[in-house]
Image (tube, rainbow, N blue to C red; front, side):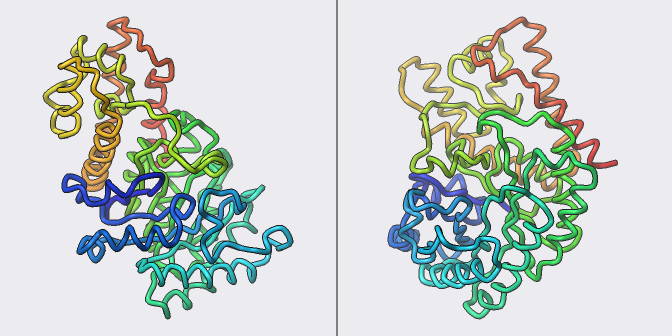
Amino acid sequence: MGVYHQMGHDSWNLIDRPELQKYRGLILSPVNDSQIEVSDRLGQLGFTRDLIDIILDPQLYKPRSDRGKLATWPYFPNDLDSADLSKVSWWVQRGEALIKCARQIGATAVCSPAMLPRVFDDAYYSQVVDVTNQLHPIAHDSKLEMLLTAIVDLKTLAETNSPQRIATILTRTKVSRAYLIFLDDLKPRQQRIDYESLANAIKIIRLLENAGTKVIVGFSGLDGILWKHAGATDLATGKFFNLRRFVPGRWDDAADGGKVVPYWTDDGLITWLREPDVQLLLNAKIIDRQAASNNPHSAEILQILDAKSGAPWVAIGWRQYLYWFQEMEQTVGQDSNFALKLLRAADKKWGEIEKSEIQLYDRLNNGEWIRPWINAIVEASR
């Protein structure tokens, strides 16, 4: 059980930080780093390299030659324009080249190749299982663990019996771990309020885990609270918002992390706050300074804000979030009731803001996702 670094643009400086030692591994991003760069960076980790799980995600979700540095990797297809992507044999061939790359860089595990389909039907899930099952013995011979990559569209999860239907197919895999990715059409900083889809996402995780498939949920954000409550073995997240939510745009412009603005991760409201709203809530004593300071990076940010120096704290905000995430993952994983306690306390806090008539500057911040998340947990337990 643990958390993983979802690697992205300029993420390597976070791997060896002493306060983030609960991260037990990393998921590589070929879009952002070439094979040579990855090998070099892994070599610089020293003894840490032998202590962590290094997973290679091929990131062939939208395989085009302009996907950052993806085309520089030897497993990238050179027959993409003419290939029949519905053929399992084509994907297995790509997977064999992928396994060779993973062995060369010294990875410990590799995710099966999978693309974003036009339709998330039974045929798609059967294909990813077939590809994974054929690659499993090849990876095993190379002393690599193979993970089943499964992309699930959150929008379609409200359909009747969709969790059972999808899980039934995915559990046909011969591997013991699944790299589960929830596709969303929301902007990375927005939160889903469709409780039925979220409840069914929780159910999928539970069904897989109960069947003996250990799940690592990739591209997690604040919603990691739900996925850990569901029983996911591991969660992965990253410094940028496009590493905390899997959206198609991540693969249309994946070279960097997007607009750089500092955000405060508030564990009382379960939200991300911009600086003016942090100041507003501090003045109203809705943010508990003492409780917040349990996160060392929250304490750093508070010192900067109190000094009114205008010093930048973007990078501190990233570390604040990553620290919050590792602590949340551990606490929710140890206490099956903690997620509901956390969300109900957040709902109460949002009620305090409403009663105080404070108007946050950021209109996206209204806490409207908290009650749907509570309802999703309750619904998934029925």
